[in-house]
Image 1 (spheres, helix red, strand yellow):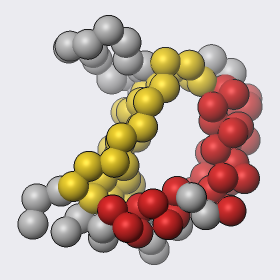
Image 2 (cartoon, rainbow, N blue to C red; image 1 turned 45 degrees about the horizontal axis):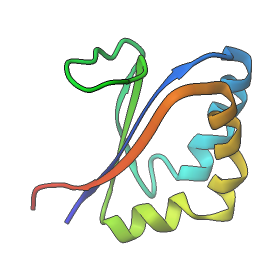
Image 3 (spheres, rainbow, N blue to C red; image 1 turned 90 degrees about the vertical axis):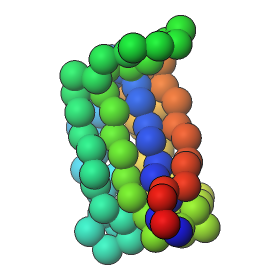
Image 4 (cartoon, helix red, strand yellow; image 1 turned 60 degrees about the vertical axis):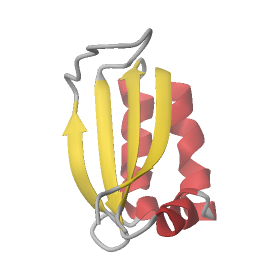
Length: 98
């Protein structure tokens, strides 16, 4: 069953975020281990207390694959840069439909 990693945040430091982007694509295996489905810099909050302005959605073959990639040394080596460059962030991993 496919799984989606949904990440939302506000970019506060564009230069630092650019450093994250340079390493994140290869670390996440975009194009091989996952598919970039959404990259929206103008997300709109319709409900809830907080949300950033940028949303990224990645599609993986399964939750297990998503966790393997997210928890890999390669991605853990760059995710701190994103966390330091953003605020109002959250990430959720959800099952897709059959």
